Image 1 (spheres, rainbow, N blue to C red):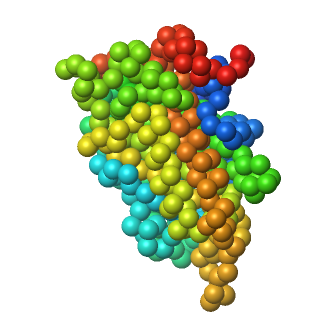
Image 2: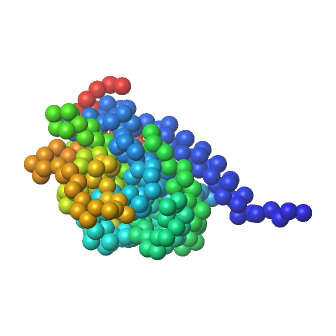
Image 3: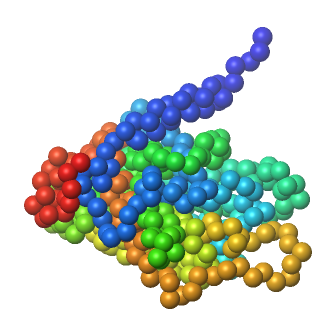
Length: 385
């Protein structure tokens, strides 16, 4: 009799459950569905990081009972062999209380050679191993002997039994394999399954901005994994203060630590230097939501360009590369686009969040029914949808 592989059955069941969770998360209303339009630039078709052509996102969600709420999110800059066809990138650590594996080589060489994985704090090593295996197995990489795996994290230890280290390598591989273009599930999915933001259920959020042709017509897309604290603001409205839920007002809301991972993609032909500048500006978007980058918060920003002419081939007969580079004087519109998309992505993560009864307690979703009257009172809602 053929033996039943219980581990494989568990992964299959988990994969089916993950698909259900992803579908449910995508059905929730987003910020713009309520008539709130952050910034001056318009979003792309999906208002997501995948509006940058070629970028794909995949999630794998792990939920069991009340104690396990975690997952993995994968971001692929393009569909090809990323090791052989690297993309320029820049990195900024606004507050370094966290883990972002692979950043020293990124800073040194100015490019990335793997997809980006996001997960929980104690699963970084597992995700790195999966990403290394994934890269080594790509056709054309048979002689590769070094892989700079990029893995970021936030700590979901309140809702998730993080010490149980429930993420397996197969989960990360599944997230990579399920990555696709188009709409991106938000909220309680993937790496955002067990996160908390401003005292409410955080998670995955995304947004994009499309510049007009007069400014180059470029797209900037952002994906966030929110797990941080501060004084919540939505397009300038002091929502946290109005709801009476903000740090240091009492002895029960002083924990503002956490982390936020921000991944920025653009199709503009940017050098690694200007991508680093773009990642720095995105920090302003986090600040506009009321985040304070507390002592125990790891706030990381990574930006990459998908423009084909700025890619860095692993094997090239040319000794000198001459990629096109956008002039510094034309960066300001991209800076604003990144700030706006980061701000909106964070708020989208909150609007998509759902109540979770977790390992150490229950975290409620943002009470949208209470937030909308506040936004109307502060004239933030610009249209009725």
